[in-house]
Length: 469
Image 1 (tube, rainbow, N blue to C red):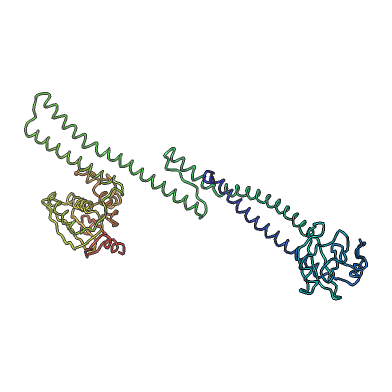
Image 2 (image 1 turned 90 degrees about the vertical axis):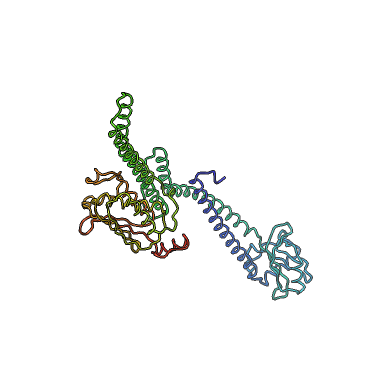
């Protein structure tokens, strides 16, 4: 039943229940303490009363009669008494209607088995009383009594008063619970409204006002961070789509123009000269390869992290060797000087090889036809240095941006995604990448990946080694 109620109502009811429990415990303790004190006072008034000889003489003179009230030397008016015989029977009584029912305990006092007894009892007319039977200094057996109503009536009134006050307290607690729930859940309501607004409008620019350092504030900051990350991711996707459309337009336009030229040649019956046709077909093949490479790069960059291949122990030096073999085919006039030491990392071998190939291709592209490229792998740092014209300092902050190409590279083949893929792959493997001007001219690319020079038997052990670096 409680689960069906709104959170505010549940919080208010729980607050009221807690207050009600506290009030109930306090009221019960108050009633119990008061009852104990009143009963103790009642017992004390009986056990400490002065049983004067005059009172006893008065009772003896009035035996079997209905005497008037006792004189000033007698007991208080609320205490009544009666004398018992040696065998425990009634002998004399203050008033005819105040006779006390004699019990075996009273007879035990009369016969001398016990000195005194304090007990609950009743009068002959059924009125509950508190009874004290004792043997006096003069040897008389005296039973005195006081009505329990002197205690029960105040306790009943106190119980009624506590019930009324407790009920009012519960109502006040319920009202206070509603106010507390409203104040406490106000940030949650703002949070809910923001989430509903985002779900309805897909507006990721919404931020929740955050105040304080409590759990709600932490939740608000986490939500704001999440929406900011989602907004950034969506912006990146939109830019990727826009840039991809722009980059795909050029090869598709050229490809379409060449295909149209071939179609018109066949339709008009005027075939192209063999050398022009071969050149046109070669251009079509190159454009198709460029388009295929561009689509592959886009797929690599657009894959979510959960879709990436699992990291496995990988020999980075072997990856670099394979990448060098591929790069040498693309730059037959370029000389590669290598200095490669063993290094083992956790990563996707195919992605790492593609990243290294992109670095080498970038170096080949900007190297002179008979240039030299230095490739070195030492202590987990891979450096690729070319001796070309270098990259201007103002262009260095943009080299890893998607589709960005320097002015001197726009006339060269490529999509502007190679270095972006390198940065994406290296960061996913927990490493760092940088492109810097080389001393003496050219450019040096530096990739540092965590790992170890000693091969590990399994992924778990290598992961432990890498995490400690």
